[in-house]
Image 1 (cartoon, helix red, strand yellow):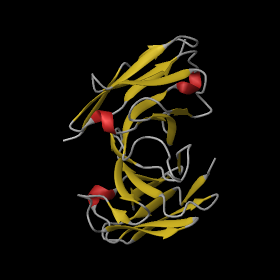
Image 2 (image 1 turned 120 degrees about the vertical axis):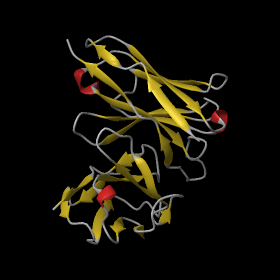
Image 3 (image 1 turned 180 degrees about the vertical axis):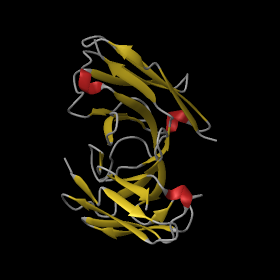
Length: 107
Length: 126
C-alpha cells in the first residue's frame, strides 16, 4: 500500500497568512493526488485533483503543486472559512490512501 | 445537484451485523463507481470499499475484507454496506462517496472522490 504523510499535523495561522501544507507519498504517484477540506461534523469536500487542478467552485486562493512523491497545498491568503482539517489522498492505485490530516487553527 | 444520503447507523454489540445504505440523486448513479470511507472518532479518513458502476468489481481494505460486503442496486440508486462480525475498532462515521470514474483502476488510472455524503455513525459497543 502507498503511505501518505502530511506535515505539519497542526498549523496555527492568522487571517491573511500564506499557508503551505506538504504531503509525501511512499512511492511515486505521478500527479494522482487530491486534496480535501473537512470542517468539524461535516463531510470532506474536494478542493484539488490531479495535484494542481482546482475543483469547480473552489476559491482561487487554493492551489496545489508537485508530482512524484512530494506535493503541496497552498492557501495564498487565509480566510476565516478556511480553518479546517486538510487531507491529501493518492489515487494512483488501490487501496486509495489518505494522509493523516493537517489541522489549520486560528493563531 | 448531487446528493448522497447515508442511513442505517446506530449502536450494535460486538459480533453483530449492520447494513448501511446510501441513497444517491442528482447524477446518473449507474455510470459511476461508489466508495465507502470511514472516520473513527477524532481520527483521519480510511478508505473501506469500492464497487464499480455495474457492480461487477469490488475491492476492500484489508481491515474489513471477509467481514464487509459492498453492493448496489442501480434500479433504486442506492449503495449498501453489509457489515458482519463487527468489532469495537469499526466504530466510526461511515461516508459514501462518488467516484469520478467507473470505480476501478483501468489502464493504470484510478479516480478521486468528487462528492461525499454527510455520514452515518456506527458505534460498536457492548
